[in-house]
Length: 359
Image (cartoon, rainbow, N blue to C red; front, side, top):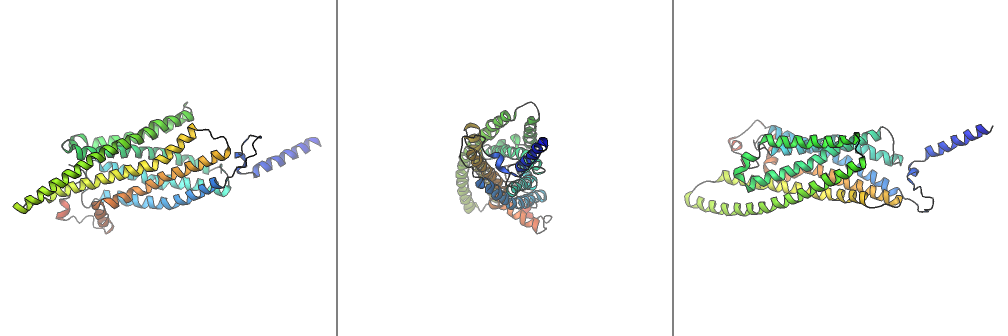
């Protein structure tokens, strides 16, 4: 009978362990009498899941409209090489809203419903796919914004070199390199490279370094833009004087400079939002790697903070398309024409429209 009793006790023990949900995360230290509170962690999972459920359809709809407007291009104003940066960013944002965010929603809600940090399959697999896709897309978007900043810097600082330096082939090569590079880097986790080492290299080489480069290049662009705006006001005053004296018309150069100014402002806003949204993530990841969390409560709180920081990146993804609509007059006009199904009705005024950047 003793073997049966032992087997019965083992069965009861396994049943009790199976019924426990997130209690496996309790500290193994028997000397600690500290009680871990999981409520903030799981409420964070639920709140961010609901937030993503709101952001996802907004991201999908806005970026689909942006890509449709660029494809139709009723005002013929999306023909500069820099437009491919916008297309790539919009495609990344669309993929994030269409694939990444739904995977994260399911995983986070499942965590809350099961009150468990490991809700099991298929949630675990979906979460991993979401992490891999978001890694490639969001990291590539950092390089794309950096490329957009440098492109616009050349456009307003060295306009005579723009055609020779910024070409469609070079922009497409830059976009392709960004996607292929980060895809290859994330695949390194399946070879002999330790994940901990891989994540630390990613933190310093990609997240930190590229963010610093974006900050520096944005400062350079802002400084150049101020000079450009001053020169535009001076030239505008001279042209107004010439028009009053000679009755001339300088509408086209003025229109081109207005477009350059608007697109530069959009670039600066995009980079500013990217910097602000990425800083919380950088700070929390550095804390995770380089500070010691001695209690389970500290680990849970830091994990919740990291989840909130990641949510900031998804907010940035949702805002991108709205920035174009807010700051670019030609995009708003083009969008209205596309929604009104008038993309084929190009007037003589439309034929004189210039691209957003210098030709």
